[in-house]
Amino acid sequence: MTWTELVMAAAPTRAERPAVSDVRTGEVLSYATFVKRVTRGAAGLRRRGLGYGERVIVNVPPGATLPVAIHAVAWAGGVAVLAASGSARMMITQRHYDPAAAQVEQVYSFLPVEGAEPFSELLDERGVEFGPLAGPALTFDGRRVFDHDELAGDLRRLAARVAIAKDDVLISAVNDPFRVLRVIDLAMMSGAHVVVAHEPSLVGCRVLAQERGANVVVAPYDLARRLLGSPALRVVDERTVVSSLGL
Image (tube, rainbow, N blue to C red):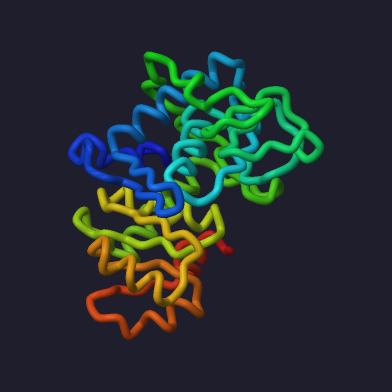
């Protein structure tokens, strides 16, 4: 399986069950909706001229729309660039677009923003059935580019080290978009449910865990250390999800 196929693998059995809950916006993304938006968004990007290996700037905060934007670009054969600025022909954003910072020709936004088309306009009736088998897929610094094989292989190894079950509920108390994406990829590969916290704190994570029935939390070292004493809550240092990539 390719990288995005691994992330979508649980969708046939999880269907309308929640994949990602976004505390900041209140949006709940189901497994079925994720697959539809990724495959149809990829079709729309191709229809708009996205070429194989072409870079697309993705300026989307941690939450339910982040994996949709990243995997739509990757499934279309493009390279997702996690950044707020730079030069590319296309850009996907949540709500922010600064023409002085991002030199782009086409902008698609999940929320209304001047100068951008709605992301929903990309969603074709028929999605892309098969994504690329190999090739470049993702970069967060514009220099090191991760390819599909590397991301898929590392995700499998990460899943073996951090055992996540399909009935687990994870809290992502991570701020960095790339690390959040790794948490979401890991959880969705296993059929679990990720709750993406907004401005996570010690008290906030404990309250969120109780409200959502969470049993796993991924957090920065300082916060993870203080959460260790929480009963029935497995704590994972966020560095775990990127260490195998040499980050």
